[in-house]
Length: 167
Image (cartoon, rainbow, N blue to C red):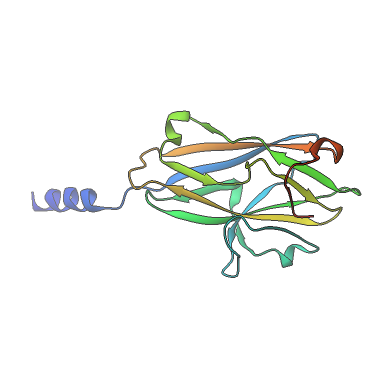
């Protein structure tokens, strides 16, 4: 009886299980290749966006395997999104608002990401990166959530007057 009571008490006091949030991407008119990394200890503030000549110059730590971020309720993580332009010409793109599924599981999830009505640019062979934050409310209960962004290539002429981030 004491063993059962001890087990029940330890289970009730245990931290809630971590949720799995899978960050995914679809691509329109541009090559696939967005990757998700944990922010390094030298990562700048949220929403910093830049490009680098080499991957080593991006303030990103360990790659998040399969884009699956594990967070406990009440937790937040800084991440770095990284994309390399494999082409020989500059690439401009924007992110359509993210789509979360199942939708009911999105309540209590906040993703301060890249779908902010900005056009991003990355030169040929360069690495584009952006610091983002993923958070779960303290009462978040869903075990998993898929969050997908569509990345859409645009032309220089089609984006006149829009904010442009990183070159």
